[in-house]
Amino acid sequence: MDTIYLHIKKESGKTDQEEEAAIRQAGEIIQSGGLVAFPTETVYGLGGDALNPESSRKIYAAKGRPSDNPLIVHICRFEDIYGIVNGLPEAAVKIARAFWPGPLTMILQKSELVPRETTGGLDTVAVRFPSHPVAQKLIAYSGGYIAAPSANLSGRPSPTSAKYVAEDMDGRIDMIIDDGEVGIGLESTILDLTSDVPRILRPGYITREMLDEVLERVDIDVTIIDPESRQAPKAPGMKYRHYAPKGKLVIAEGTPEQVIRYINTHAEADRQAGEKTGVIATAEVLEQYHADVVKCIGSREDEKTIARNLFSILREFDDDNVTSIYSESFPAHGLGQAIMNRLLKAAGHRIVRL
Ligand code: AMP
Ligand code: MG
Image (tube, rainbow, N blue to C red):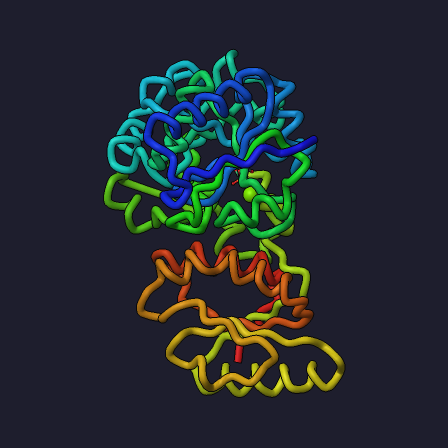
């Protein structure tokens, strides 16, 4: 199929009315069972009608995603949640008040309206109310409920700009809405509200510390903190290898001196063995690495920038055909918990503790 590209970045020169008409057209594509990739504040999503089982099947097919890995349903008005859930716990209302619209997904009991194709066969549904204005308009023009996973091929890093969506999805979906780069760069925090104590199933921009301020108790899925845990993660998607660059990625943890020495020594050995080497480095020590490609992920003082750059750097290494990648490690609290969660998955949990 020919994918339609819709540019709505400032540079596109569209008037507000033209932009509105274009988003309306995108909404019509979704209403008639098609797929549209669109920007959100976290990463680009691959949207279809959440209430149409055929649309969900198409999403799984376009991504090559296992069909037991449920999709997140996106809404654009808080009230719309009542249509797709079966009962709303008090905690959910508190969380929505504090963090919606925004990068937080809640797991709740689903209503009859939501097909099992959308929820990967589960009785629960993941719901998010994104803050991105284009996402909100598209959801409204699509009938109110868009099922959307990240707009990447299954297993690849989530796309933080439309160019990466095109890399994975050109020819596989009806339309890509290009609004440049996203703001956050990591997927939403997932909070399960179906058990007695709310539990974080996927760390994200809304941190555990922020949730602690709103709720009396918050647990965290053990598989996030202890990747060696034999337990199955409760978010089915968390069990799959993810975000993986094509090259082999190893994380080095230790003092800055230890990390620099380890990475330089190993990168040099790999280079001599014929590999193309890459390093994910923080600004403070960037100059001290020797490898074929050294990428700056941002300053250690600025975790938001690190979060925003992670997925695009992993993709850039693919574009550069880097086969052996080393990364610094980050403290796993606050936003760092989400950063390390994604980095560890990208590395297939290869971490060297020095
Ligand atoms: P993505 O859309 O690519 O960000 O992936 C959505 C994530 O939400 C996956 O990790 C899913 O497993 C998780 N998810 C969606 N629905 C549910 C649900 N009902 N229960 C638990 N996890 C869910
Ligand atoms: Mg994803």
